[in-house]
Length: 238
Image (cartoon, rainbow, N blue to C red):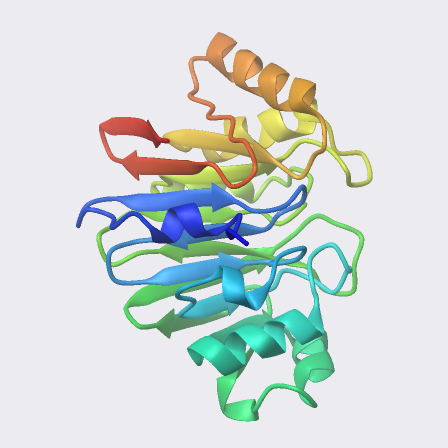
């Protein structure tokens, strides 16, 4: 059987690029530079779909974002470091060796194989949800907002990190819609805003249209589609 996730692993990123793939209808994504692969909230896939996973980031404990058995399998195959809030790490302590677990909370900072990860809060109903700013060693910076609604500090995050990509929730979470996703983009001001966390193609398309009307760039993706990001050059790989 051909893996649905594998296309991103069949392409070697350039030194100055990051490849992006959205892998479920929530906030599961793969981010791949030439040197590092970061996976966030993998659910609904199999560990054997991956060919590399240097770090796995978990935003919170909801089942659409966290599958302990899958995390355990990915870690066993790829020796991945697992970054997650404290309560999620506790849930993993029986199936993942402690040397691979990194417990974080808002304002934490972690470095894994040259990738700097900064942890911020998430405006979502959960025990202690977090969002992540992921800084690759080629300078490209990605803000993974989990399934957060907008919050005022996103404006400072945008200013402090000069964001390249921001993932914006546009549905399937309490009070989330394309309007709240657009607000996230307006606050954080990335070079490219990618809508996710929805099962509605219409929401993705409206989000991109609304950003265009505000002189911001939106990039809608199909699940498992591969998007190549370079500063100054935006392309879509088929």
